[in-house]
Amino acid sequence: MSKKFLNAITTITVIFILIGLAACQSATAEPAAQTSAEQPQEERVFKIWHYETGNAIGDSWASALEEFKAKHPDVTVEFEEKSFQQIQETARMVLNSNNVPDVMEINKGNATAGLYAKEGLLTDLTDVAAERGWDKILNSSLQTTSRYDENGIMGSGPLYGATTYGEFVMVYYNKDMFKEYGVEVPTTLEEFEAVADTFVEAGIVPLALGGGDRWPATHNWQELVLYKADRDLINNFQLLQGDVDFHGPAFTFGSEKLVEHVQKGYYRADATGITNEDANAAFVQGQHPMVLTGSWQYGAFLDQITDFEWGIFIMPGKTLNTGSGGNLLVVPQNAANKDLAYDFIDLALGENAQTVMANAGGVPVNADLSKIENKDVLALNEAFNTILANDGLAFYPDWPVPGYMDTLGGGLQQLIGGAMTPAEFLDSIAAPYNDYKTSALP
Image (cartoon, rainbow, N blue to C red; front, side):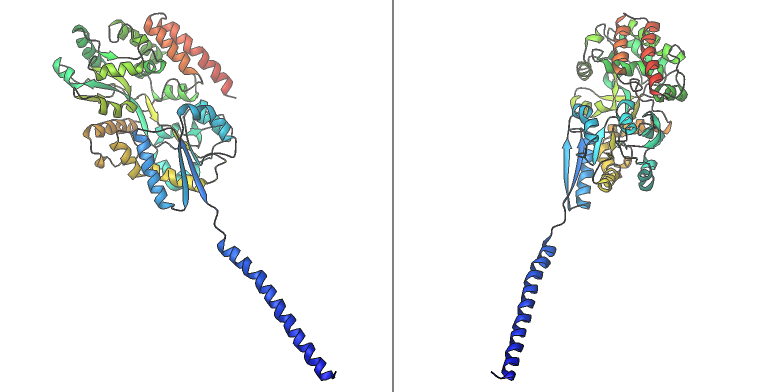
């Protein structure tokens, strides 16, 4: 075989080998390119836990959620309704895990939001609030329940939550009964008592009260305390900032005045055996011309009261009022999608969602009042704005101490029932308050 022929065969062989190698390289490279092109992006799941349903707050947040979905069409949203009790019982455990929602509704106060903040379970929202303007929407009274110091005490320190609504206590009154008995909406405490006296003289119990549930009477009591209270006393009491004299003018006046009202017949003799639900029903049925309760009852009365005209007024002649910002939207420290959480809170505080809340009978913090369709709802929001303008939110008297509702509410039941004197009642609520204050502060 000639050398020339062998060289030709060798050349052909090399060519086939090179072609084969190129084919192999092409075969291995092509699937890799397809895999890269077909790799789907990881789906983002945004989770919210809340306990608002069938009310103005829930309607508002649902509206914000629709805006959120339009803004983030690639995000899957899990808007999970929990019960208040569920979140109260499991929040601490959940927040300590990695399986947390991105936004959670929690109760405000030292025993809940303050505890979680102290334990490092919540995201500090101070800088985010400043960047996005939440601190301009939420005035100082509303921010009080959103800020907690290193000891978990409400009122100062970083901002750990945002409230999207307010709530306050007021008097609901039967306009028809007021007209029938020739009385006007009072402008002072003395005028309020004169109105009540007029009904007593006519054989009508002026005020419905569900004293069988412990919390309603705490509102009636505090509204009277506030006639002699100032901002310093409220801050000292609520925020554990300074000394509190339970036998001082404010607490003594409120306690003695409540007993006076009971003795004058402003409440039913069996008020401590009546539930809050039954007391509200009695007002709806026209059995009483007045009931003192919160803005949370407003929407229900809009639906339930059909037989008479009714209205509202704030207990007259004082600047402080029982009420606060609502429960908090917080971002857990372990949340996976904090940027999305901030976007949702933005929308929940936005004018659109806030105006939805107003028209549903709620008390928003940033609504366009010119777009409120119902004149009665407008009156509700104007009343709240008046309180805010006066820095008038005095919070709720059971807040300062964990478990204080049992102490305060139980004591008021005995005070109303005549089993305690005002001085004995004040002693009974001072001891656990001072014990907790001593243990809570360094």
